[in-house]
Length: 268
Image (cartoon, rainbow, N blue to C red; front, top):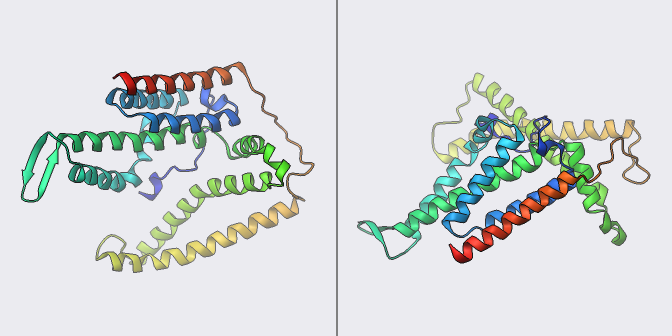
Protein backbone atom coordinates (compact mmCIF):
# COMPACT_ATOMS: atom_id res chain seq x y z
CA UNK A 1 0.00 0.00 0.00
CA UNK A 2 2.91 2.33 0.65
CA UNK A 3 3.90 2.10 -3.01
CA UNK A 4 0.42 3.27 -3.99
CA UNK A 5 0.86 6.66 -2.30
CA UNK A 6 1.41 9.13 -5.13
CA UNK A 7 1.18 12.36 -3.13
CA UNK A 8 3.86 14.78 -4.32
CA UNK A 9 4.85 12.74 -7.38
CA UNK A 10 5.30 14.38 -10.77
CA UNK A 11 4.41 12.57 -14.00
CA UNK A 12 6.16 14.22 -16.98
CA UNK A 13 4.02 14.85 -20.03
CA UNK A 14 2.96 17.32 -22.69
CA UNK A 15 -0.76 17.60 -21.99
CA UNK A 16 -2.73 20.82 -21.70
CA UNK A 17 -2.46 20.73 -17.91
CA UNK A 18 1.30 20.18 -18.11
CA UNK A 19 1.69 23.25 -20.32
CA UNK A 20 -0.33 25.63 -18.15
CA UNK A 21 1.43 28.36 -16.21
CA UNK A 22 2.21 27.12 -12.67
CA UNK A 23 0.66 30.26 -11.18
CA UNK A 24 -2.55 29.52 -13.04
CA UNK A 25 -2.52 25.90 -11.84
CA UNK A 26 -2.28 27.03 -8.23
CA UNK A 27 -5.24 29.35 -8.79
CA UNK A 28 -7.14 26.56 -10.58
CA UNK A 29 -6.52 24.25 -7.63
CA UNK A 30 -8.08 26.81 -5.29
CA UNK A 31 -11.02 27.20 -7.69
CA UNK A 32 -11.44 23.43 -7.91
CA UNK A 33 -11.59 23.16 -4.11
CA UNK A 34 -14.25 25.88 -4.18
CA UNK A 35 -16.15 23.95 -6.87
CA UNK A 36 -16.13 20.76 -4.78
CA UNK A 37 -17.35 22.48 -1.62
CA UNK A 38 -19.96 24.54 -3.47
CA UNK A 39 -21.65 21.35 -4.70
CA UNK A 40 -24.77 20.62 -2.64
CA UNK A 41 -27.28 18.86 -4.91
CA UNK A 42 -26.99 15.50 -6.65
CA UNK A 43 -26.72 17.14 -10.09
CA UNK A 44 -23.90 19.41 -8.94
CA UNK A 45 -22.03 16.43 -7.49
CA UNK A 46 -22.41 14.57 -10.78
CA UNK A 47 -21.02 17.63 -12.59
CA UNK A 48 -18.02 17.69 -10.20
CA UNK A 49 -17.44 13.97 -10.84
CA UNK A 50 -17.64 14.44 -14.62
CA UNK A 51 -15.31 17.43 -14.41
CA UNK A 52 -12.80 15.41 -12.36
CA UNK A 53 -12.84 12.59 -14.92
CA UNK A 54 -12.33 15.15 -17.69
CA UNK A 55 -9.26 16.52 -15.87
CA UNK A 56 -7.78 13.01 -15.68
CA UNK A 57 -8.34 12.47 -19.41
CA UNK A 58 -6.83 15.85 -20.30
CA UNK A 59 -3.78 15.23 -18.10
CA UNK A 60 -2.91 12.02 -19.97
CA UNK A 61 -2.32 10.16 -16.68
CA UNK A 62 -3.80 6.66 -16.63
CA UNK A 63 -6.91 5.99 -14.55
CA UNK A 64 -5.11 3.03 -12.97
CA UNK A 65 -2.43 5.31 -11.55
CA UNK A 66 -4.98 7.81 -10.27
CA UNK A 67 -7.19 5.16 -8.67
CA UNK A 68 -4.19 3.55 -6.99
CA UNK A 69 -3.68 6.80 -5.11
CA UNK A 70 -7.05 6.23 -3.38
CA UNK A 71 -5.96 2.99 -1.70
CA UNK A 72 -4.32 4.68 1.32
CA UNK A 73 -7.56 6.56 2.11
CA UNK A 74 -9.96 3.62 1.71
CA UNK A 75 -10.18 3.28 5.50
CA UNK A 76 -11.01 6.99 5.82
CA UNK A 77 -13.73 6.64 3.17
CA UNK A 78 -15.24 3.64 4.96
CA UNK A 79 -15.29 5.42 8.33
CA UNK A 80 -16.79 8.55 6.75
CA UNK A 81 -19.50 6.51 5.02
CA UNK A 82 -20.35 4.58 8.18
CA UNK A 83 -20.64 7.74 10.29
CA UNK A 84 -22.93 9.39 7.77
CA UNK A 85 -25.09 6.29 7.30
CA UNK A 86 -25.61 5.51 10.98
CA UNK A 87 -25.78 9.05 12.38
CA UNK A 88 -27.87 10.86 9.77
CA UNK A 89 -31.57 11.02 10.65
CA UNK A 90 -34.22 11.59 8.00
CA UNK A 91 -37.81 10.84 7.04
CA UNK A 92 -37.35 7.81 4.77
CA UNK A 93 -36.44 4.82 6.98
CA UNK A 94 -35.09 1.90 4.93
CA UNK A 95 -33.67 -0.38 7.66
CA UNK A 96 -34.16 -0.75 11.40
CA UNK A 97 -32.67 -3.27 13.81
CA UNK A 98 -32.39 -2.82 17.59
CA UNK A 99 -30.79 0.63 18.02
CA UNK A 100 -29.65 0.88 14.40
CA UNK A 101 -31.77 2.99 12.05
CA UNK A 102 -30.65 3.63 8.49
CA UNK A 103 -32.36 6.33 6.49
CA UNK A 104 -32.23 6.98 2.76
CA UNK A 105 -30.94 10.47 3.50
CA UNK A 106 -27.96 8.98 5.36
CA UNK A 107 -27.07 6.64 2.49
CA UNK A 108 -27.39 9.47 -0.02
CA UNK A 109 -25.26 11.81 2.09
CA UNK A 110 -22.60 9.10 2.58
CA UNK A 111 -22.32 8.58 -1.18
CA UNK A 112 -22.04 12.31 -1.79
CA UNK A 113 -19.35 12.68 0.90
CA UNK A 114 -17.28 9.86 -0.65
CA UNK A 115 -17.60 11.55 -4.05
CA UNK A 116 -16.51 14.86 -2.50
CA UNK A 117 -13.40 13.40 -0.83
CA UNK A 118 -12.30 11.39 -3.87
CA UNK A 119 -12.90 14.28 -6.27
CA UNK A 120 -11.01 16.64 -3.97
CA UNK A 121 -7.99 14.35 -3.72
CA UNK A 122 -7.86 13.36 -7.38
CA UNK A 123 -8.63 16.81 -8.81
CA UNK A 124 -6.09 18.72 -6.75
CA UNK A 125 -3.40 16.10 -7.40
CA UNK A 126 -4.01 16.08 -11.17
CA UNK A 127 -4.11 19.87 -11.35
CA UNK A 128 -1.02 20.52 -9.28
CA UNK A 129 1.46 17.85 -8.18
CA UNK A 130 0.95 15.27 -10.94
CA UNK A 131 1.40 17.78 -13.77
CA UNK A 132 3.78 20.35 -12.25
CA UNK A 133 7.47 19.80 -11.60
CA UNK A 134 8.82 20.88 -8.19
CA UNK A 135 10.90 23.66 -9.80
CA UNK A 136 7.92 25.11 -11.65
CA UNK A 137 5.78 24.80 -8.55
CA UNK A 138 8.34 26.78 -6.57
CA UNK A 139 8.48 29.51 -9.22
CA UNK A 140 4.69 29.73 -9.44
CA UNK A 141 4.20 29.90 -5.68
CA UNK A 142 6.95 32.49 -5.31
CA UNK A 143 5.50 34.70 -8.03
CA UNK A 144 2.00 34.52 -6.58
CA UNK A 145 3.23 35.48 -3.12
CA UNK A 146 5.63 38.15 -4.40
CA UNK A 147 3.47 41.09 -3.14
CA UNK A 148 4.04 39.85 0.42
CA UNK A 149 7.71 40.81 0.11
CA UNK A 150 6.62 44.39 0.75
CA UNK A 151 5.83 43.44 4.37
CA UNK A 152 9.10 41.50 4.79
CA UNK A 153 7.60 38.02 4.37
CA UNK A 154 10.33 35.53 3.27
CA UNK A 155 8.42 34.43 0.20
CA UNK A 156 11.28 32.61 -1.52
CA UNK A 157 12.27 30.63 1.57
CA UNK A 158 8.64 29.70 2.24
CA UNK A 159 8.12 28.52 -1.36
CA UNK A 160 11.36 26.55 -1.27
CA UNK A 161 10.43 24.79 1.98
CA UNK A 162 6.99 23.87 0.64
CA UNK A 163 8.43 22.45 -2.55
CA UNK A 164 11.22 20.50 -0.84
CA UNK A 165 8.69 18.98 1.56
CA UNK A 166 6.45 18.00 -1.37
CA UNK A 167 9.39 16.68 -3.37
CA UNK A 168 10.66 14.42 -0.60
CA UNK A 169 7.32 12.74 0.14
CA UNK A 170 7.82 10.10 -2.62
CA UNK A 171 11.45 9.65 -1.54
CA UNK A 172 10.49 9.02 2.09
CA UNK A 173 7.72 6.64 0.99
CA UNK A 174 10.22 4.66 -1.07
CA UNK A 175 12.67 4.66 1.85
CA UNK A 176 9.94 3.43 4.21
CA UNK A 177 9.07 0.59 1.84
CA UNK A 178 12.73 -0.48 1.65
CA UNK A 179 13.13 -0.44 5.44
CA UNK A 180 9.92 -2.42 5.95
CA UNK A 181 11.01 -4.99 3.37
CA UNK A 182 14.38 -5.33 5.11
CA UNK A 183 12.67 -5.74 8.50
CA UNK A 184 10.27 -8.36 7.10
CA UNK A 185 13.25 -10.30 5.75
CA UNK A 186 14.56 -10.36 9.33
CA UNK A 187 11.28 -11.75 10.67
CA UNK A 188 9.36 -8.58 11.56
CA UNK A 189 5.55 -8.81 11.40
CA UNK A 190 3.53 -5.65 10.69
CA UNK A 191 0.15 -7.23 9.84
CA UNK A 192 -0.85 -9.42 12.78
CA UNK A 193 -1.49 -8.84 16.47
CA UNK A 194 -3.21 -6.05 18.36
CA UNK A 195 -2.94 -2.36 17.50
CA UNK A 196 -0.39 -1.87 20.30
CA UNK A 197 1.81 -4.71 19.06
CA UNK A 198 1.64 -3.37 15.50
CA UNK A 199 2.62 0.08 16.74
CA UNK A 200 5.59 -1.41 18.61
CA UNK A 201 6.60 -3.30 15.46
CA UNK A 202 6.89 0.03 13.62
CA UNK A 203 9.60 1.33 15.97
CA UNK A 204 12.40 -0.49 14.04
CA UNK A 205 11.05 1.26 10.93
CA UNK A 206 10.65 4.79 12.31
CA UNK A 207 14.11 5.07 13.87
CA UNK A 208 16.11 4.34 10.67
CA UNK A 209 13.60 6.44 8.70
CA UNK A 210 14.25 9.48 10.93
CA UNK A 211 18.00 8.92 10.67
CA UNK A 212 17.77 8.66 6.89
CA UNK A 213 15.62 11.82 6.72
CA UNK A 214 18.12 13.86 8.75
CA UNK A 215 20.98 12.52 6.62
CA UNK A 216 19.20 13.50 3.40
CA UNK A 217 18.44 16.96 4.79
CA UNK A 218 22.11 17.43 5.74
CA UNK A 219 23.24 16.28 2.28
CA UNK A 220 20.79 18.66 0.62
CA UNK A 221 21.98 21.60 2.76
CA UNK A 222 25.62 20.77 1.94
CA UNK A 223 24.84 20.56 -1.79
CA UNK A 224 23.09 23.95 -1.71
CA UNK A 225 26.03 25.53 0.12
CA UNK A 226 28.51 24.05 -2.38
CA UNK A 227 26.50 25.69 -5.18
CA UNK A 228 26.67 29.04 -3.35
CA UNK A 229 22.93 29.17 -2.77
CA UNK A 230 22.02 32.27 -0.76
CA UNK A 231 18.25 32.67 -1.19
CA UNK A 232 16.11 34.64 -3.59
CA UNK A 233 17.97 37.97 -3.62
CA UNK A 234 19.48 38.57 -7.05
CA UNK A 235 18.54 35.08 -8.21
CA UNK A 236 17.80 34.71 -11.92
CA UNK A 237 15.62 32.10 -13.62
CA UNK A 238 16.43 29.98 -16.65
CA UNK A 239 12.76 29.77 -17.70
CA UNK A 240 10.40 32.65 -16.98
CA UNK A 241 6.71 31.66 -17.33
CA UNK A 242 4.37 33.99 -19.16
CA UNK A 243 0.58 33.99 -19.22
CA UNK A 244 -0.93 32.68 -22.45
CA UNK A 245 -4.40 32.78 -23.93
CA UNK A 246 -5.02 29.16 -22.93
CA UNK A 247 -4.33 30.06 -19.30
CA UNK A 248 -6.98 32.77 -19.28
CA UNK A 249 -9.46 30.49 -21.09
CA UNK A 250 -8.91 27.70 -18.58
CA UNK A 251 -9.53 30.00 -15.62
CA UNK A 252 -12.69 31.22 -17.36
CA UNK A 253 -13.93 27.64 -17.75
CA UNK A 254 -13.41 26.98 -14.05
CA UNK A 255 -15.28 30.16 -13.11
CA UNK A 256 -18.17 29.20 -15.42
CA UNK A 257 -18.37 25.76 -13.76
CA UNK A 258 -18.48 27.45 -10.34
CA UNK A 259 -21.42 29.58 -11.52
CA UNK A 260 -23.21 26.54 -12.99
CA UNK A 261 -22.86 24.63 -9.71
CA UNK A 262 -24.27 27.56 -7.73
CA UNK A 263 -27.21 27.72 -10.15
CA UNK A 264 -27.79 23.96 -9.86
CA UNK A 265 -27.84 24.24 -6.08
CA UNK A 266 -30.54 26.91 -6.28
CA UNK A 267 -32.80 25.49 -8.97
CA UNK A 268 -32.14 21.71 -9.06
